[in-house]
Amino acid sequence: MTINDRGTWGSRFGFVLAAAGSAVGLGNIWGFPTKVGQNGGGAFVLVYLACVIFICLPILIAELAIGRHTKSDPVKAYARLRPGTRWWMAGALGVAAGFGVLSFYSVIAGWALAYIWFSATGSVSSGALESATFFTEFTARAPINLMLTFVMLAATAGVLLGGIRSGIERVSKFLMPVLALLLVGLAIRAVTLPGAAEGVAYYLKPDFSKVMNFGTLNAALGQAFFSLSLGLGTMLVYGSYLTRREGIAKAAVMVVVVDTCLALLAGFMIFPSGFSIPGFDPSSQGPGLIFVVLPRLFASLPGGQFFGAAFFILLTLAALTSAISLLEVPVAHFIDSHGWGRSRAVLVVMMATFALAIPSVLASGANDFFTSLPVIGLDFLTVMITVWNDFALPLGGLFTAVFVGYVWRIDNALEELLAEQAWFPGRQFWGLLIRYACPAAIFLIIFGTLQSLIA
Ligand code: TRP
Image (tube, rainbow, N blue to C red; front, side):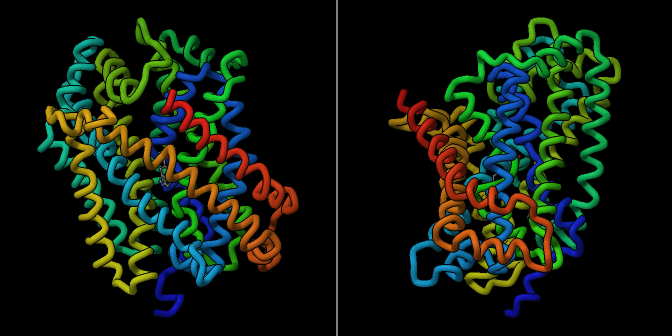
């Protein structure tokens, strides 16, 4: 297979929308506001921005550079740059994480899909207890949830069958503007609700007493990492479809700006909405905020069925464009490293991911085994989130930084990054961040997570 058979993006604009589609997902609309709520509002936002600029942007650039240079899936990319070594395993970790992350991501995406219907038909009542019970009872129903997960995976696979330009790029070009419009519309609705000012104040007022601790820094960096789709080889694979004409640094900055703006905008939608409900607790955990608190608001709002449905359409579409990028990592692997055709790769990877998703669906049900695993006592879904998000992704990011900083080396990476006189201000500083700041910061995330699990 020649390099051109793999496919390329049609334009930089197309790449930026596809990569932003990957980045903008449940992490922005659900994860970001939840973390801001749990970690003291505005001050957390500032720490988050610092993590994005100084740690995540450099790694994003590094992943894109490896991808475009090697024009391969993660396993073959590392193997090409350092043949005969074990570096290919860093890529294999990413391919495995693609399966792993998507296996639970698609379950949550399935919930979002169902809530479009529940909102539009006004099935959730405005009572606090009722909306919580509704959510628990709904997620416990295995057959319907297996079907919803399957529908989301099948939609994802359907897009990937179209390939890079007429699959991923075309869908992203259509969905990303729709997503941005929905988000802006909902944020405007939210900030004009009664009691919204309190929510905006909570969101924007920095309380520095809450951020000066290790746990918060850890949460900010982990969130930034996940939100920008790093550490898994997603951006490496998307970079492998870039042509040399498109400057990497400029495209990376655009992706970061879009992802961060949409996360910040999601905060303007969630906090005013939350605070307009009596007795709202901004630090309420887990799925509560999105699947329990907001449906209550929609149930009590004039036109709430419309706004509720719009919100869950937004969530489902955001999840879909991210799921596409997760599935594409193992798909690219089987195409590039094993010579499979695209259709076969897409179908096999999709079915394998579905199989892996089944225990995550059952984790919310009545089956004691999956709701409380032997020895660890946690439910399967939580275990998957911990293993992949909290360990595999940071580890993948650490490998990327160490590989580019010390093995492939900064000057070789810069040669790729500066091809065709590309724009890249602060390139020396980038090298320092990749060699020192990124590995140190990521090491701290992994250490912090281990510590919090043991404590
Ligand atoms: N970034 C997406 C979100 O915010 C999720 C995602 C897609 C992802 N691809 C990824 C996360 C790769 C980590 C790695 O929801």
